[in-house]
Length: 142
Image (cartoon, rainbow, N blue to C red):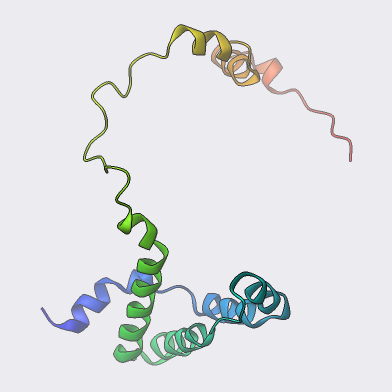
């Protein structure tokens, strides 16, 4: 299996090019720079968004395989960084399947509390199929 075929299978990861441009603009805005300085004590490097935008344009307009490869690699790195806390979590044991009794009935106290909610009454109303009540309008004050 060639590398380009593997990259083509990952091309779903590529966003529309204008999204990379918007991310770059947002990252370099005055508001974002102030926020970055407040949170991190310094401004962050936004150049990856610009490179991603350029690669996206190269891929979309010229079908440049190298640009697609760079873009997919950047998206994979971004995704890995975003999920880093999840992957490094060693506190909680991850489930392989749901608990055997995941769909058992709720305890009686929860059922009684639920009976006093708007959602319960609305669901009951819809189940009774009273079209005249379902067609009512609500008054909204603005």
